[in-house]
Length: 319
Image 1 (cartoon, helix red, strand yellow):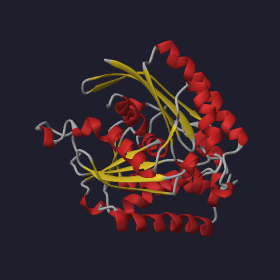
Image 2 (cartoon, rainbow, N blue to C red):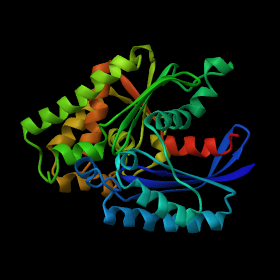
Image 3 (tube, rainbow, N blue to C red):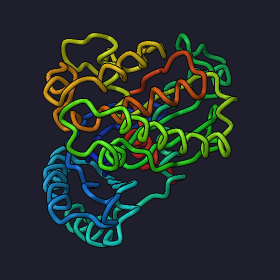
């Protein structure tokens, strides 16, 4: 057994997973998430803001203490879309190295997609027909894994491994800053139309490069998807055990996306499963999921609480 620590530094949040990895099993020791909005303004300025860096470093200092306390023997820090896009990414790299003593990896979109696929499908793949064991009900490979992040969304098709992948710049933070900035009230129709057009342009590119039509199961990842699932399940509080591997119909996703577009900021904040740091970006995130399901004809999405963070943890033990 190996105790590892995985850190995923995205555009909206920084997350930690300390886990024990043994053979084909990953067991959580501690799992944390803080909304730090590292990607604040990156789409407009091309730089990481000093205050965003400090929020991120503050969260990471806390994580470093947890890693030491739990005695993890190996640490991997991965940064994604916001850091990829930033001209001053070296400020981030230097700060993280000073906190953890390891070099953070600013991964490419393709690498991010592979880690997301591994994390999301590991417990599906080991139960798939290829292994001679039954799949969880309603899940059949090939999978289309869609990871809706803050700065980008990854689309990955595969069964037991990645067969095709593409990362496109339609994350929930990026689109909120581009179209919905300061929208405390429901956005006007022309703003929604521009937002939808932005998403659809990206989906056109995905269709041209990723064989989404081969996928039999849509697997949705990350906070926008899990929040929509919590709303669809009418949970009185966020419960990852009920959300993980839930199956949400496309009609329900569309209803929730439409409802979120009509809500004020305060009404969204009052949703029981809504994380405070997701209130302003959930409209764009839900709309991305809705458009994916509509454009590609999926009748339901299988929601996974396991994602790139779990993929990073699995990767730490690989030679």
